[in-house]
Image (cartoon, rainbow, N blue to C red):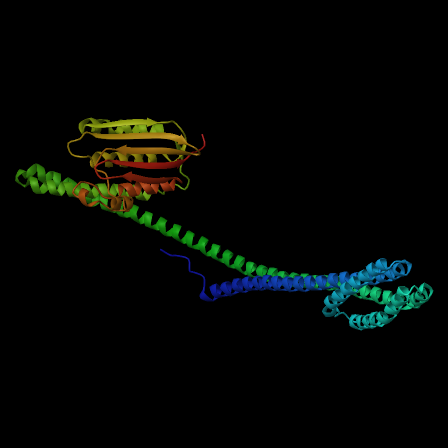
Length: 453
């Protein structure tokens, strides 16, 4: 039998390399995407956290300085020593809070121009410490006019401080804007990279797909050619089997006629002649089976038939034999149209019924049951007997040509009956299987496609 050649090693290697490359490309794309996204997310989170902390701390220091200015005015208005002490305690608390905020802000001043502005602000705040203390001292001695003049001289330094605080907030807001722009740029670059890699993967996939399609088409063409070649070879084999069968039948007929004449004229040789006759009969049966096996594929399109009619004809053909051999045949076959020629289906039923009679259990009346019904879109036909049955190994080889079980080899038969059954059923587009166990009979399950009425 001719088989299609496998794909060349170089072609299989090309496919493997191509698919591995595409898989590696997409894997690398995913890794790059994950790493880039994580890095960008971490950097953005750090920048945002720093900027938020910077803005909060700068705002906090600005509020502390504004409240100090207001408390200085309150100190001048206080006429009692107790009130002045309370105001001075509040000023001291604000100065401590400012110092804590300044200490926390110090390492965050990393933006361009931020550190210079921060140093300027620190110098201005330090320069205010002595004038503020002088104004408080004048207020303690009830020299309110002098204290107010000292506060007026502090307006300009406080205004510079406000400008520096506003500048620091503006620097951090600018950094936030730049961070947003950076994120957008990185995302755009990542999208462009991923898009390019995806496009490259698609192009490679298309190239491989085109190559695979061409090879598949070539393989399909090879399969079609091999199938046509096998079909021609099968036709030749069938024709050969048919010719051989016909050629063998002629000499066998002559031998059979000769043995009959010998039997009539030589009664003492009856045993030897009986052996010859049985041999001739066995060879004739073998030839009939070979012809049936060959003719099972003679028709290109199997005809339709009614299983019920085929079963009824089988009963008529076997009537005398059933009575002579004490065989009970029950048939409950639903009328339908199946895709199988009536002659072929009758041959199938004949072979299965003949096996049931041939391989009956000793001492038990043989029973054969044929049941058929429409099942879904097919026709379920079952032939059951109560004969010898088969073991698992025999079941697995039941449809092999010329196969005969060990314990049935002494019985008449050629080993082709079930092969004919299988070939006919599969030729009709159906399936056949066997269910059996030793001593419990055998059931053949046939599934045939329904035909058109």
